[in-house]
Image (cartoon, rainbow, N blue to C red; front, side, top):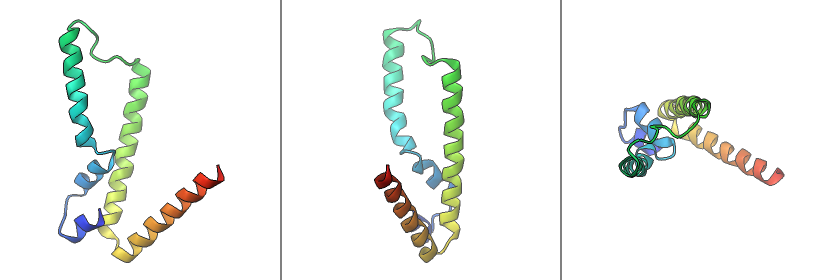
Length: 101
């Protein structure tokens, strides 16, 4: 992501958008699956989840996107040396928490 900003990338929202699990890529199989299901069963409900579960997933998605936007904003504004230190320490803490479990 840092290379994107070094080489002239300006749109923070775009890099934050891509950070969330390859969002545009996962949308393609979801649309295909939805279209097949609607053709096979036209009278079926639009959303198969319970309303409470759908609302919880939407809130988690919004919070995740806000987190990704802030991360991308930080990467756009920080110098390379500082961002490298932050990313390295993030990796170290992730590895420590996995080995202690």
